[in-house]
Length: 248
Image 1: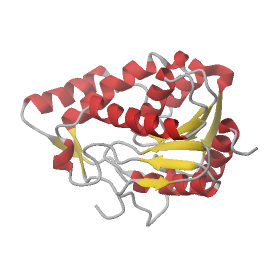
Image 2: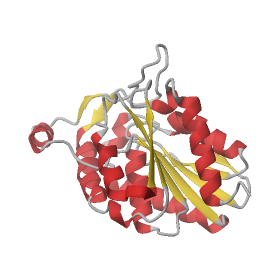
Image 3: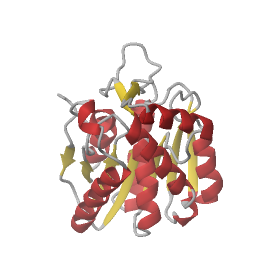
Image 4: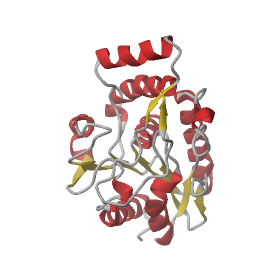
């Protein structure tokens, strides 16, 4: 898909890994990635397995594929940088939390409408029943954006088995949030039709004063492409620059 390509920028000795969401691609994070790169950091925004091409390519991918890709991207960037922060939207936020739980050396995390808990069990059962009946996709979740005319480059359908894999992983990540020891900037949309803001409540409660929460009052789920995008880019860049030490 044109525009879905990974983003890479070679900067100074400090870096940021930027991770997109489920059925999306780096298009939704390019503004944030570019702003951080413009501040002089080395930035990598990888394209996760199964994303950015056609939904058929995502049907056989699972959490293990996306987390392995995120881990590899982080390890590669960390080998080139003195310090690294991680930024993620939605499932990218899930992966960001997962990296923070497993890498205490990470300088800081920026979580944008992150997913860290599953949906109710009866809804999961419905999804499982759809998969067992042979269905592979359901309606798309992309472009939850308040600003008229703004759209996300994402798949028009949601692959069911990968979604179930993500929901299971989100619960496991959410159960280990207390393992995150670095500073966290949590950016939450008040009106989110994809990931309930209660996910952010869970993170804020688990992390206490390690977490700074900022509410995005005008944007929906894909806030990086919405009314609050400039504020998000500014806050994310300032936070990443501070925690990595790249601001001097």
